[in-house]
Image (cartoon, rainbow, N blue to C red; front, top):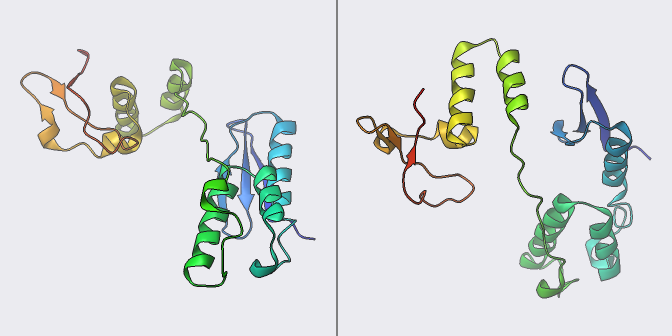
Length: 182
């Protein structure tokens, strides 16, 4: 049987990626250990084996729960969406797993880069505009999308103060963030 996911290694960064042959997308595995990366890719390839050749009406709750246990957060999210879609267009007469019995989706904490990692990024970047952008992200503690979404109205030039909101929160930032003097 052909596998959907393949392990890639980028030697210049020393990191592993998972390549999806179907969507042609590459996702980082957040590990530099080859054994860990191989285990993640193996789990991705095996997660849906129990339900791959079944029609949706023949699928049992045990099959879905086994796939959820073998998979990742992404498996849980997409199987849940597919299950709800099948219910909404009447491919299923009743739910395979009741809404309250689906396993809870728990995401990992978002990681912040260290000063050393930031310095490596700046050293590797040749474009001075991008270097300045990364430095602004670092000083403000914002993601690239947060900082790129800043608008003129959010900057008080006289007091050197910026009001911003994080894309994760989708809510206005409580208070003002003062930029350190450069």
